[in-house]
Image 1 (spheres, rainbow, N blue to C red):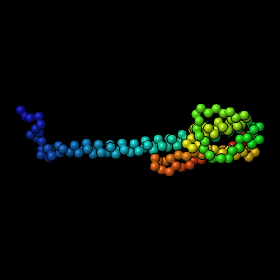
Image 2 (cartoon, rainbow, N blue to C red; image 1 turned 90 degrees about the vertical axis):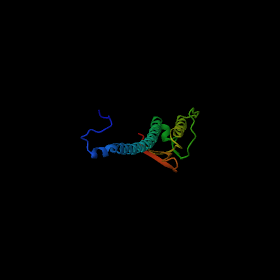
Image 3 (cartoon, one colour; image 1 turned 120 degrees about the horizontal axis):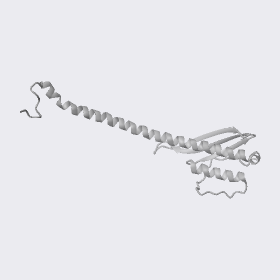
Image 4 (cartoon, rainbow, N blue to C red; image 1 turned 45 degrees about the vertical axis):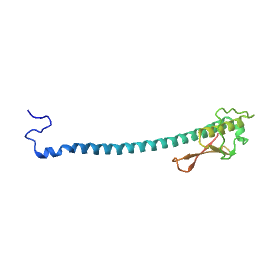
Length: 162
């Protein structure tokens, strides 16, 4: 009777020397897998950052279209210059904001400034009206990395009101 760990008599000495080669193959496979997983983690981090940047651009687009729609709904005040604003000073966000302004245009502007502050980091905007052409610029600040300096981003939209 032969021992279970012993090689059959026909096994050559070359076969016995390659017995530990499988362990090296496993270690190399684990190393390749670890490098692949690190690459995947880096790709995920980059994807999250780009997704956040796209989200902020979407919010800026939404806010520009929002004030444009408000201006179209109140053309008399728009033509009188009630919606013109040229400052990039960020406001403080107030989630429970309720406007007490007297006119619809003042109320629209207060609500828009609050939305800029709440939806974008250091969000601010300007509105320039020239006849029936309106240019809306939305500005916000974002960080590319944890230790990086903040970067200012702008979204500008020009459209005709009527």
